[in-house]
Image (cartoon, rainbow, N blue to C red; front, side, top):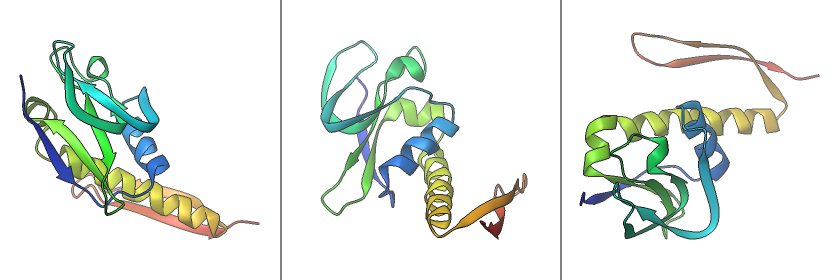
Length: 136
């Protein structure tokens, strides 16, 4: 049985989190209004709970569920097993944060009447460059 770690994030917008996870290839992200149990790789129900869940079958055959739970301070914490941290990479939560930041920023800019005219990614640094224009 793999130990779960809770990793603090700066993620506050659920919809931007879900879009980030989907962009990373997790097509079936579950979103719940109440906490749901996570399950281990053997199908065992774990005490850890989350509102946003990626089920183990959508990660790898030996994975555990991954969850995001809203903490008391209003941000989401990632709940990831040691095994999944190893197979996904130590920077996995950082990559989620980066994709989340882009989706949250784009949503705010669109709400202010901007459109994304161009999006490029510097492959060396992985930085995203956006060119904006004011919508009509």
